[in-house]
Length: 598
Image 1 (tube, rainbow, N blue to C red):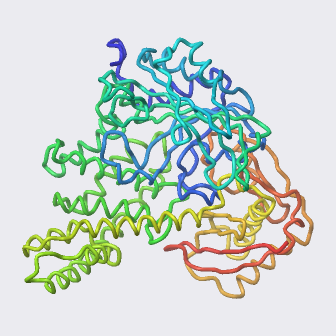
Image 2: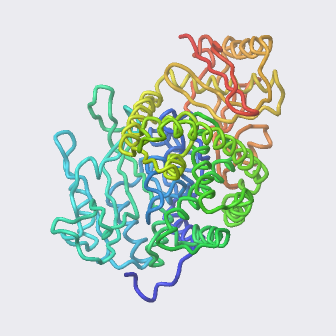
Image 3: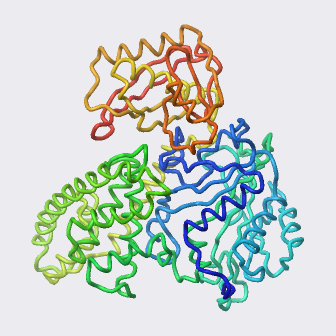
């Protein structure tokens, strides 16, 4: 394992070591962005540090230059069913560094190798790497292999794989993409078979870092062209690296999660062991993720759609497991207090939104209990109808789950009490059908992709600024943007407001946006410090570090916002603005859908 002289490293120390290492190599540190992506129709949450940087990966100038570093809070839901094993998490932190048209493969690989071996003291012989093997479209990545060989790795530590393992992107149908080289820690256990490598899930290899080399753009016809600048996007999972460095068996044994597990253990009175560990890990992960989503500066509330649905699912799964161990509602308060306390120095927004987090968890607990009661009555009715038989169909069990939110485990318990078995094979089939429909729906819904910075989406993005300004003029300066989403067809803008807008208010908002368009106003971009932006009255989420420069886009007389772009040069390019619909998004949040006519 790791050398004996290696001391225990805390999460705070690892963040500082990482950012300091890259700052010493001319990288500027940027803040962790919101968990809710800005104008990105391809994902519900920020899944990596590169999301806020997409305009700059595509060629826009970043106010801090071409070398960046940070730690980013992330949410990934694709592996939600894997949570509870030793490595998967819904919420996690990603350490990342970027080159925006600056250095490329050799320099990136050398820096990663140096950090791992000289700063973290991981023995070189316990590293393994994977490289893109090439195909008919993109050639084999010989450059990365040469870089690793030059640093001292031997052939047995280097593995070639195809697109499934060593190709990133694009996130949507089109956009930036490229090969990557993934770095693994070799635990030293025996290979499970002769061809065992990093792609194997036997546990011998643990992925700790991924260096993505974005040098291609995938076009609508499926062809690839070279980007005008070559970029590097790297990501190192904080929790996984902590587990490796501290010789822990799972990410749940690290200092970012172990105190939560300990608290759950004290609340249940049952030890954290082979019987309980998966349940305890799911509870710890889900309530941590829910706390960070609710505590985000663009915080949302639990609902039945999109991000709100994910946070509701996380909370309800936690409640179901709580009931299994007879834990009371106070559990939420105690655990979230612990999570906020553990993270308030790194992510102060959690403390700022503490009351909101607690109130939403309490509301959801009450709502779900009512759902459980309703589902219980329906379940008892269905089960009583099959008395005398020995099986309850999986279709009925799925209906209880899908329509009434009644967990299938509860259905099984009730049926077992009556001597009835639930057809779980049929339930699993129905559940898989449901998942596939949801996946296909999501692919259609979010087909725009990260790189859809077309002329039209650029215009719609600028229109959101004018809409925000108009809403604040008509409804008052307390209006605050809660999220936005742009596709090629329309913009969607969520904002804080407690009631439905009147027809007169909507007409006035529409008029003001079109007034700005008709006046042919230049859209001016200025780079300035956060403090200066505040002094000038710019609006936006001020989560940047005090020293950072930001871009401020102004439409004189109508709008001044901190933003990363992209934007048109003049309001006249928008032609004509039309509000399509105004509706409720969630409690205290309204939603406007609008478009422009070319």
